[in-house]
Length: 110
Image (cartoon, rainbow, N blue to C red; front, top):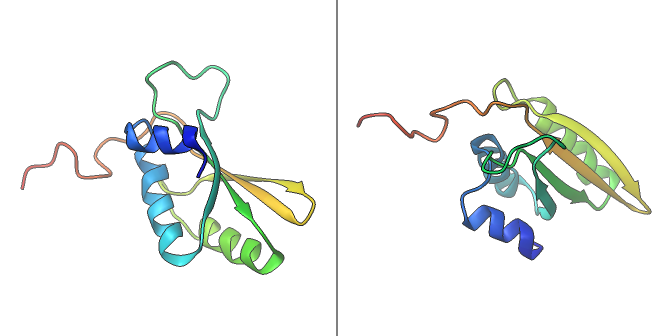
């Protein structure tokens, strides 16, 4: 993982849907994070980062990854786009604004 992505994760600047998706992905796949970004040119400072880009090293991996992402239901159903770089495909996983509250249990009483 590149330092900017690591910094965003450790600083808690990532949308809860990305955290949930990343946790599920790492449980099923070996994930190489390319970047974590704001998913839009107009995103304000302090808004959780809503875009994750991962590398898919081959067709089998890519097919399984896309099937997993497309099987999600709202609010965890992302917008997905692909960029090809030789034998590797980058998969951009984006979520729209605003981020729904309470997905990670914040604000709930025991």
